Image 1 (spheres, rainbow, N blue to C red):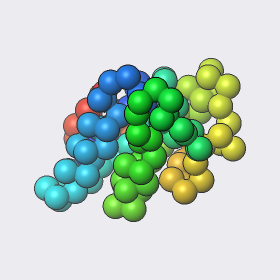
Image 2: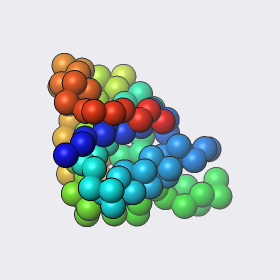
Image 3: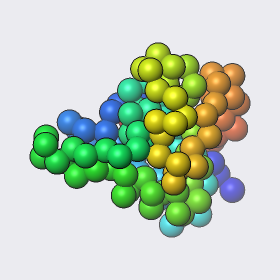
Image 4: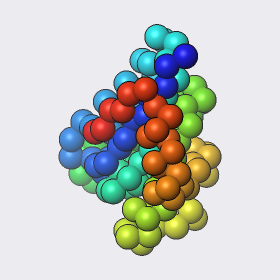
Length: 119
């Protein structure tokens, strides 16, 4: 079975990257392709709990992320990216069951993937 790594590099609002990445991950399941989602750089902000972007005219991405989790798509967050942005595991929504990984572990995921999609 093929395995695709989807890398989320941008924050959740102001562009379509995050939602499109989530849609891609769900679409891959229909094609019987396994997907992993990894959040690095500002992408780690997608995973922060209790988001309320109504003040900027957006809906939260959390519902889409929770759906991705329900479809058994593993969700990873880069530890170094979180640290650089002042985030800890307590800031991450526990419903997503995010696994925090090091850069070395991210390298392993990259090597295991047949394809990579970076958003």
